[in-house]
Image 1 (cartoon, rainbow, N blue to C red):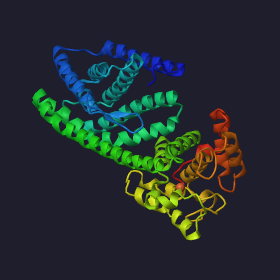
Image 2 (tube, rainbow, N blue to C red):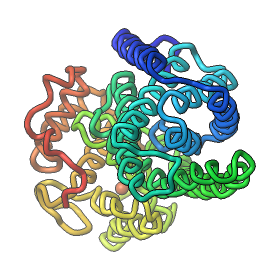
Image 3 (tube, protein in one colour):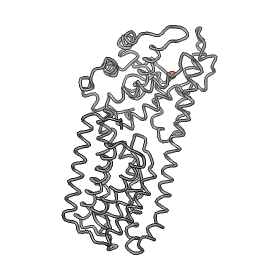
Image 4 (cartoon, rainbow, N blue to C red):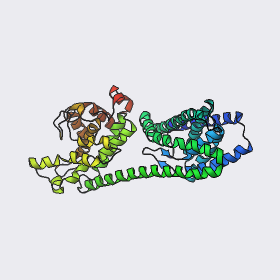
Length: 429
Ligand SMILES: [Fe+2]
């Protein structure tokens, strides 16, 4: 988050903090705490602080820790108040260590209080109890798990949406998509941790913590590998651009234009992410074409142009290896298709061209027009936008052109949004 968040974000944080404080007071008003509970609470808090010091970052700003495992074990064992205090202490400790700004500290603590508190209350309401090893606890536990996830994801996604003006639904779906497998995989372990504590006490839980850390390590390794692979390919795309002084920074700018357009279309955040990666890597297939051919200023023979026309197909082939983005590689294949069907490599027409590819085509062309080339000087932004308008319906999707023109002229999103956006999705093929 920025040093000084917008007013709407400040208001939102204040509301979340007030709700969390109210929930805490309410819980204190009817929950009795004895010496045994205090001892257990301190033990679980230390465990939670330890777990929270090792987060795994999610692609669009969220994070996953095994802290929730500790919080859930304390929900099952001691109810909502102790689990809320455990999460509160863990978050205050980790945010203080990372020297977070006060508004971030307040928000994170408050949203975890709300998520853990409501999950704990739901677990109690459904008559879940950790002290008997009964199957009757499974249903309340599952419901509480999903309540926790929903509150946590919604609170976090809302602040991201307000601060960065991105689609709430998009960011919420992206965060849920990443968090659900993690939560489901670890759910049985959490229940087992509570049972272990009941029968063996703190020592058993400390031994039990090892597999949880292993699970976290595997998840982090996956996220790191994904990041490294994408970074390597993007570095390759950068290197390709840099070989020719006229295309330096091209991929980066195309990715930025494409993301702006995708966000204006209110695509889901995971789809925006896919558009970003595919736009950045749209010309990666040029790696398979000779430099001499790519940088030649004079006219190309038909056979030579046919070779250059292979780069979208080569690019798609390279990117197919990216399993998590593999279903979006057709954007790269189709980034030279034209709306009237005269493009390549497949001669697709109109909406048969994937939306992601239509977005990249527009972004790619606009950047090419507003950059110097060996054979011509760059157009002004106004001239390039005029050219985009002229090619609406032939080269470019006319609906996208309207949105792009609104975007570049600085029109607010509300004015630019019509019914088209409500149904827009890059998944359409
Ligand atoms: Fe290209």
